[in-house]
Image 1 (cartoon, rainbow, N blue to C red):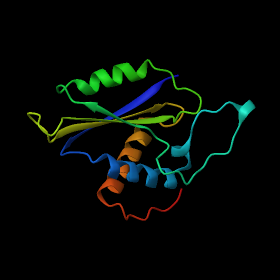
Image 2: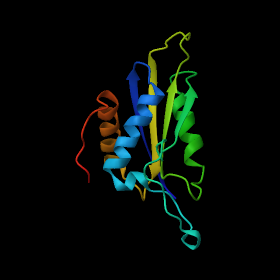
Image 3: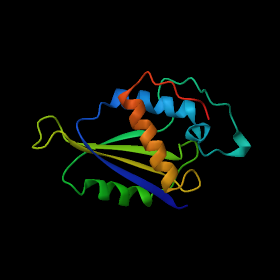
Length: 141
């Protein structure tokens, strides 16, 4: 199926624990953000009070300014497996000792059936607002 991607360049270091908390807020706000592919023959209840967000966060070492392109090229040819989220967040950043440790990119990918490009950017915007303010109280959709 067709995948969408959004890339956000950030001057700063992303704290993964804060990003996970932001994703949990977004998943709570948007039911579609909790979407996973299921096999209807083995349908099981999902625990919506999970410690970890449903959306996987994959950390990638930033090699150069084109690392995000490689990540996107590799992700768009991968299939989405049963039980896997329709959304994936990649955090591409340098190690603390790198030449430019404060430059990173967030790459959000999703199945087009999950979101279009505009919706994906709205979701990314809300995720970043939730990252900045972990106490934000979103209205549920």
